[in-house]
Length: 94
View 1: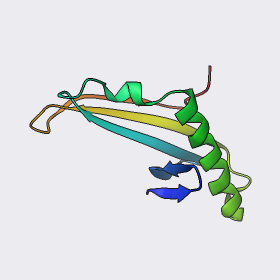
View 2 (view 1 turned 90 degrees about the vertical axis):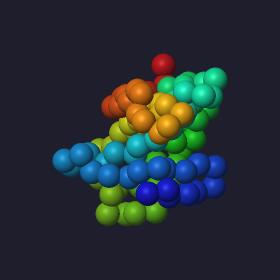
View 3 (view 1 turned 60 degrees about the horizontal axis):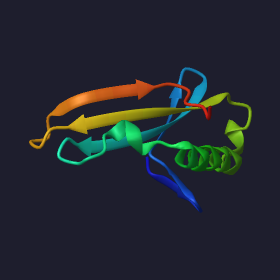
View 4 (view 1 turned 180 degrees about the vertical axis):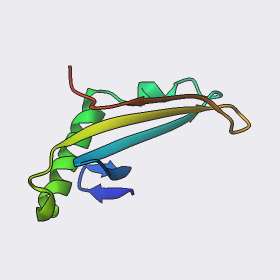
C-alpha cells in the first residue's frame, strides 16, 4: 500500500488471480463540492500508469505478469457513512 515513486503513488498493489492490479482509491465527503469519481482524469491516470510500469520494473519477478489499473471511488456522508461506492476495473485513457 502507498508505494511512491518520482511523480506518482500507488494506493494498492494486489493480485487478482494471476493479474497484477494497481488500485487508485479516492475518498470524498459529501460536504465537499467534488465527488470521488471526479478525481480521476487523464493526467492522473497517466501518472498511475507510469508508476505501475516503474513498480513492475523495480520488481523483476513481475515482468511477465499481465496487469491493469482499477479505480475505487468512495463518497462518505458528513458522519463517515459510505453513501456511494464504485469500482471500475481496467481503467483506460479514452
